[in-house]
Image (cartoon, rainbow, N blue to C red):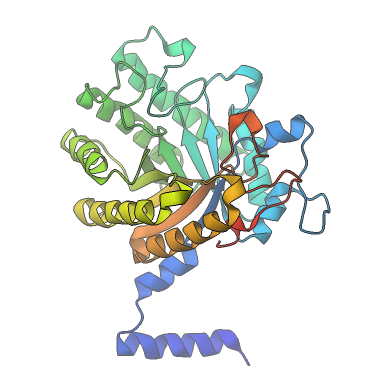
Length: 333
């Protein structure tokens, strides 16, 4: 049987009957089954390897592809210690992902190290700069990294301008107490992205996506200040004992923001204790269904560092066991 011909005929029947939407079809085709693998090169340099179910050492990007991971998220730091997650390291990982046909998300932290709700430290080289200089810094850094990737044959589909910026970024100038300046910094990044990859979607990303009121307040304020974004990104780390409630809360957030702002949403980070693999499997199955229910407004879900060995740099929310094999936590993809 020619399945493709059959499926097209079935699609036509369903469309005519109103039981199938072109938007839902496109969402199914383009949905991002994602993984952030920023640590992978550093793990490998430290002597760690990754294995398939039969115990055969395998490229982690191949392992992820075989688990239906079709998108890779990579963080960028400005001048990091050791060079990890600088432009060269990001290109190396992006090339490996591209070789497997995986789509690329670039996550700008605009810091020399981790940026999150408790840390939004300016790069040392920018520490004494005025706000107008910081606007230029953000634009130059964004375009510089993206042009470097583009000139080396990498297509970037999504770009985060800031990482978990609930309290703003590039503190203190870009904190949420200086909303016009925060919007200006985000717009500098946004304009930089579009200058290099005009069709890339720009994501503004917040932690704790289950806190719907706080997410709405942030985006109301950003919109009122003239901030530009194409996609709303949310982190989601539900506790194993209460994941059903947390998944319902993040679903409420997603339903609200997609309607309120007319923008699509992504879960750009998710994870759960590697020792709770069965629970994580259930949680991920449910979360994926909730994002996909949004149709073309639900773009994807990214597990944060699923390939992290248990306890690597203190992280225990990956999907790898101590023998370097993926657990069933990642199977819902």
